[in-house]
Length: 290
Image 1 (tube, one colour):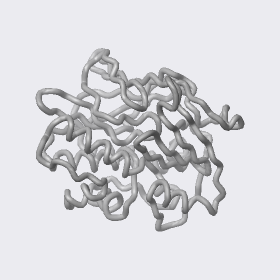
Image 2: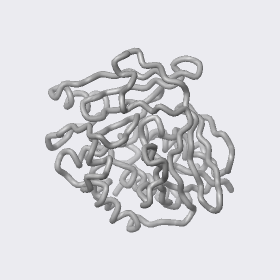
Image 3: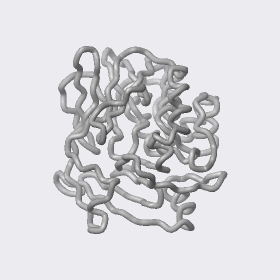
Image 4: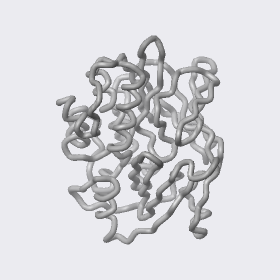
């Protein structure tokens, strides 16, 4: 695996040697704007592999994306290779319908120490929940970013990531009640501890999430990619674009229903993805918002 090939994949041409917050932020932003958060392999009859070599081949060589276990694993490798002090952490994702955090550790995120400060870095949550900058590990501090204002809080050794969102304007009235729309201005995202993890800790859940009928990842096919102003999302046949800060405290959300014959071109033109096998788009009944 070649770090220069990774840099080329994400379009990064800046410093390789400055291990500071500016470089860390730059790497994160380049990755989230070039590597989609997606689970399309599942809906093409292929596996979501966890091994680093397989992830590198999928994302870097074949120009694909992946879910958190893949894209954050790749980011962990890249940051570690550059010399950043990086630790894998495990997250418990908040379920709105169940009003609780997942019982299993289903999310991979990263902790990075640089210049005496500690940050949470995550390139694998996607949609409008995706951080655009590393979050300093400070409890109770609002950390405003373009997508929203994030907050980290700690209680009894457990950390919580939440966000405060803007209002949203949906010009297409027929989509006002779409199940893809986030309804709450304040949103819990996930919890985590600072216990170091290894990729082997996620092997069982990586299998479960791509085969279980209870998994949102088998229920819905999705792909999201950040831009300089917002985020594109494709869920089943529904394509959306969210423009952050369309007006004061308002995001613009546009919807478009695609025909089956349009999917391939949209994946190529918007997400820069060309699939090797036929995608079967799916929009099941599991809770998933954009």
